[in-house]
Length: 181
Image (spheres, rainbow, N blue to C red):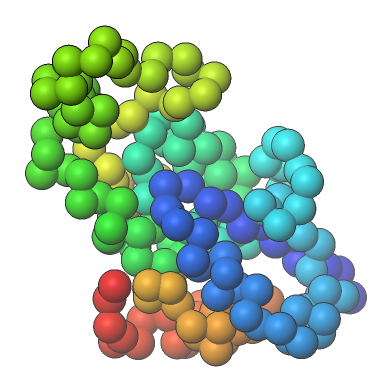
């Protein structure tokens, strides 16, 4: 049996979806022989590989690094899944959108107008990626094949969706109506 090349990615979010993935507990042992985990914050892989079968993408697209990664993911992956509410809707990550463009958000966050302490905005691109003026859900940047909502999605929901994808068909539980975070 050929193993499915699976990846998980964490963009702009809290990692709660990955924590929920880890809540699959013993099922992860059953999953291991069926997949090759080729990229994930759970593995020490530096570059997103070619030829990924399925990816679960957690988090909204909040900065230039996220946007570039989303494009690489789409080019190199057969099936892209928006994993959790931040990827599906922008959710909590997008709460900064009403505050204005990225420069205004940074100025407010660093209290530059009121602090009077000589603080300056972070500008080292290797430490702080360039913020986008608007946080977007994944599908606003690249085409998405399936949506797995929830904040975070339950382990049972993740298992059902992954099982369907490993079987080669569209997830039957991904579109169920659930509470958004």
